[in-house]
Image 1 (cartoon, rainbow, N blue to C red):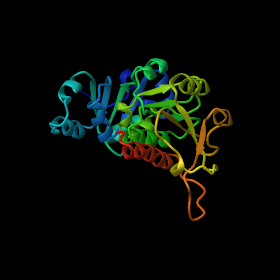
Image 2 (cartoon, helix red, strand yellow):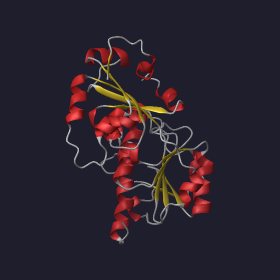
Image 3 (cartoon, rainbow, N blue to C red):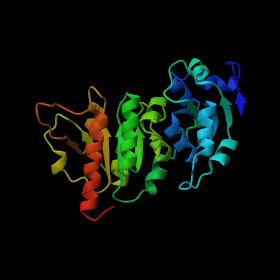
Length: 279
């Protein structure tokens, strides 16, 4: 443990640039923020570089009962450098008010190759693709929904926010630590590959389409595409989709927030598998 009173240590640099998450992603690191998220990071296999925390939060972690986890917090904490500071000092370092006094820097896991990953994927698979989905908080909630409903892969398009941006990680509540994520340089090419070589239907979510989610067969290998918060799935991607589906709305509501809508689509896909004996 290193007690700090200033910002001089170069290993604190990632905490000084929290508002530049995309730069951090390009360096292969991400920020985990808040007690529950950091605890879930400790329970993952991802490499943790450093942790910045108050002494109170550090003691909470050390003393936390851990019977249900195969990971020993002590072992994980011994593998990273821990900086101890007051909460006021931490807020000066990160540049904004923290809800909780704990934050960590870890490595983004190495991504699998798309074809190699798909070769080993099971039948009845569900893939989620993000097409120009720019709000990182929405991305984080979608990641959490993907984990909850058993999605096999998240495919982040070249113009979408990364699931490893700080706010996305926070809103996923650490679910991203256990989800396969691939950032593709061309979502168009990747979707064509998924459909043509791995016999997967590409399904666009479109609030303006008349095809109801409840009348659509969502079994088999499917890839559900979620688009931009304002304009939806792009025309280029829409043109290669096999189907377009929507959630029927009532009371003159035109659409749901994309993160909220994702839970409905993924729940329906999972329900159909349970109903027909697939789990």
